[in-house]
Every structure is written in C-alpha cells, then in structure tokens.
Image (cartoon, rainbow, N blue to C red; front, side, top):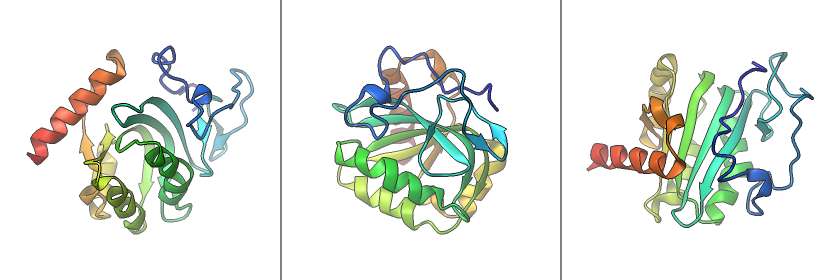
Length: 187
C-alpha cells in the first residue's frame, strides 16, 4: 500500500497545503517517513488523515469560482464502526461547503471495502448542497462495492460514474465530463 500515491499531476494547479481555505493548509509532507497505516500496512505519506483509522484522502483540486472539488480516497470506507462519513462530513466537507463548494467528485477506485451504517450523513450532505444545485459523484467505485452502496440506500444521495481516463485530463475537463454525464442521467 505504501506504493499507492495520491494523483500528483495536478500539483502545479492546486495544493491543499497551500490553500488557506483547506483543512490541510500548512501541512508538511515527507516522501520518506511512513507513519500512517491501514491495518498494519504503511501508506504513502502524501495521503491526508481526517480522523478515520482506515480511510485516507487527498484533495486533488478545488475550484472556488465553479464550486467543485475533486478528492481521491484510499483504504476501507467504514461507516459501521468508524463512522467515516461523519468524520469526512464534519472534518472536511462542512468547511468546503462554507467556502462555496457544492459539487464533489470522489475518486474511490482505491477504496477496498465499504461497510455501511445508516444514510443520515449522506442525506445531510445532499441537503446542504441542494440549494446550490450541488451533487456528489463517486467515480470508479470498484464493482464489488456497488451493490453494498446501493443496498445501504446511499445511491439516493450519491451518484456513481465510471471515468477511467480522468488522469489524462485537466481538472476542468474532468469536472465538465462528470457533470455532463450526470445531467444526461437525471435530465
């Protein structure tokens, strides 16, 4: 797991540690000191901890004018034990919403397991961005997790999309393609 780095080709466009509105503003990262683990497996030190013992993230890009964020995840999404959605909502998302973000692209291709609880934080998140015509998209959810997300009722609040080529495009193109696909589905 230590070889799985967050996507870094947009760092010339955005770095959360340099964004005063980011919850990770001022963070310093090491390329060599591996401290964080998921189930005794060290992970790359560029991932950010948001108080979940099994799920880490990296805010890859934020556009405050367009009101969107692209966030990549690694690990096990566990709402049943660790209440990861609550930690994510309270420690990251609430600040982003206060700063005008209402459209969220969650890259979840490196989420290994998903354990649901209830859907109340997803519902709250959805309600918080509804006035701004916001949305939440899980991009590239692994096949074995799609049914778990659906069975938990989260698909009422979070859309699922596939977009394997996202790494080859700039953030604005990724945003536009995700939004266009979403509008086709709901329109």
